[in-house]
Image 1: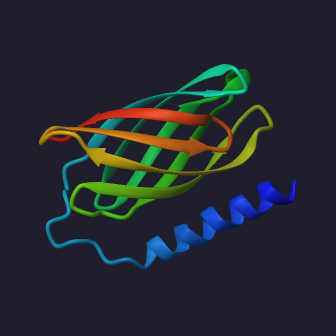
Image 2: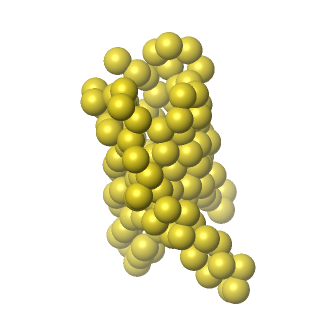
Length: 129
């Protein structure tokens, strides 16, 4: 129990740090969409998301049919973009915290890995326009 609380507080603290991080001058305005597939307690989870200007949103489906939305804050670096987020899910799942990283694979494709306290560990595949 204490480990879970410490983990959630750590993600929230890092998230607040990212809120005050300035955006790069060449930050991309065009949204970057992605799809995500993961696993939590043996259940397959899904999500779709998009980001622009260092902020993102993800609509996900978790275990027991729980549906929720996560708001994400990205740290825009040249190749790698770590992120943290917070969301809310139905089916009495409540508040979720998330974190992860997206990496540019080519000029138009990126991959990522993330963790969501409701949807578990997930892999991401997205495109850049």
